[in-house]
Image (cartoon, rainbow over all chains, first blue to last red; front, top):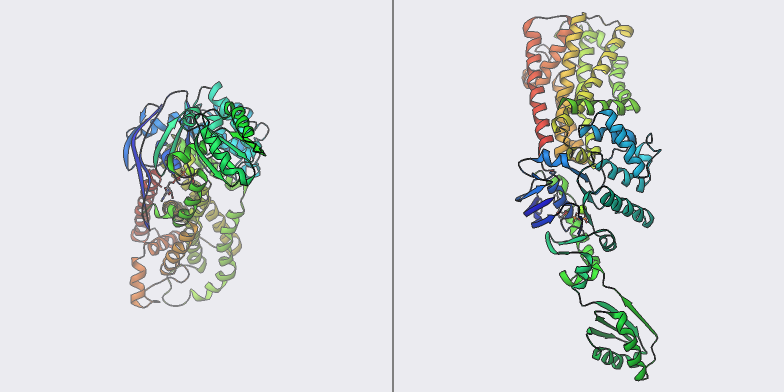
Length: 335
Length: 254
Ligand SMILES: Nc1ncnc2c1ncn2[C@@H]1O[C@H](COP(=O)(O)OP(=O)(O)OP(=O)(O)O)[C@@H](O)[C@H]1O
Ligand SMILES: [Mg+2]
């Protein structure tokens, strides 16, 4: 469905050249639901805008839905749906007007466009809002409308740029259901970006991790997580017993990265849950009182940390400071 | 392309009609000129050096050009707002013709402008006793249509390049005011009235010739050189600006 080789894009700004995407190779097969995960400024949107013919790549080639990006951009546009990070519906228009217009752009007649729009608004829980001005919709409704607009022509491939950013938890969960339904029931290939780990985890068959314009890892969420040292086990003992408890834990089988901080001991093990009884017995035998213990499954945040040496949250912080300097990016782009 | 032009045109019309405040506000300016400035012109036009024609035949066509210049030059602000809302990008990922996305908007603006121009002309006739030959008015309105196309296509091109109100507003102001003054809209810049340097600068300004042709139309002076210079200049400007706008809309990046 998507085959890209060596995609690159740099922007000239007043302060110098920004290498937003530096050589991305990716392959997405029909029917996949692929997540593009990365911190702010990693190059997700830029990659998507290249794949959807909005931006010309500085270098590299790609075929999207069977059409070459450079030689047949109109072919690409006909086949794909794209929902931009910040949406794309006009606040002053009515829901029905935007839906119909979008359908007509794809060559539908007004009747077809109206029928299609009725079907989609029902599917996206927007029924009855036809005559509403878009500026009066709630954030979640508006986001669902953006997605409905991207699906008007029943595309085989849909790009969603941060579909759930800035939504409350309830609307997010609701949108996930819609995205899953679109993927399963309508057999649509979905390529979405996100910087929520739980989202990538919950939705995607496969994840591409992008950092600093390059893909640093890919695989199914479980595969990526399995590549790590395993579950994180944490337990607490009185501060005076911390060091001794740490030694005991480190002697257990398959334990790695043991670390003591006062009375808190942390380590990783492939199956933390299975190890717990042994741990409790060993600590008990040494007559150390246990105050608490927990096992956490590795998260994609851990994956990101292992891959890049930074946690996803730290990466965001860094990007924000850089963000200031690139405020003017839109205007400088034309230079 | 024409289908997409039509779709965008229709959408724009629906939006204008839903919120006609702007159409009315842009018309206020010429109407105020007619009411508060027009009466002064009656005596002034007797000054030696003034071009032929009654005061209303001189003022009304000038106000139409002013409306075309100012009314249409600001349409780019609407486009910047649409760009921010992501509407332009959304339309650019559809197979819709990108030239159509421009033309639909331009034609909407031009039609709106002509309607305003007709209303002002009718007002000048009914209230102020403007007399002008029918075909002269038709010719002048055709010029207004072309002027509207020119200004709105350029405004969109510029807006899409700048993408920021903060850059767009000062640029417009610094271009429009000299163009307006130098085209002799309020007081015609003739050899009899202006020092020769000012006269020559004003001759270089294409809009001077457009104003002259408009005035010739309202006087019913269909002598060849009175209307062709302005007409041809405007036609060339229209072609250039539409080409510029189309190119800007088609470009991949941005
Ligand atoms: N038009 C532009 N002009 C200049 N720089 C740009 C432009 N667009 C993007 N960039 C820069 O390219 C880098 C990647 O941006 P991009 O929008 O692709 O990030 P992203 O992964 O989508 O981030 P986010 O999660 O914040 O949406 C950033 O450093 C950004 O400032
Ligand atoms: Mg982004």
